[in-house]
Image (cartoon, rainbow, N blue to C red; front, side, top):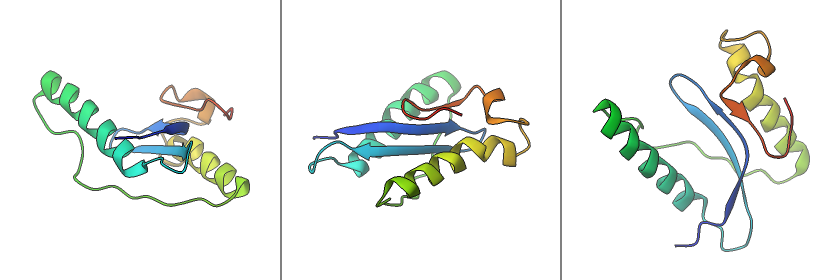
Length: 102
């Protein structure tokens, strides 16, 4: 199984996660990436807390250009602010990006 994906931005919220990834080749498999990430994290969570972590499904969207990518990164970074958890994305410890700053 070739996953071949790179994390662009993420934000772990109390009841869900936002994750923006980019395929690194024509063979990249976002579905396999999400399945594997959910499988590995759910296993560890279940061992520790004895309960399920994820719902069976997820929402996905394909972005076609850099402008859309930047807009989604901003949306991800602002999520804890909109939820009232912090006043600024810089104050939230569970978000980040290898390519963009908050």
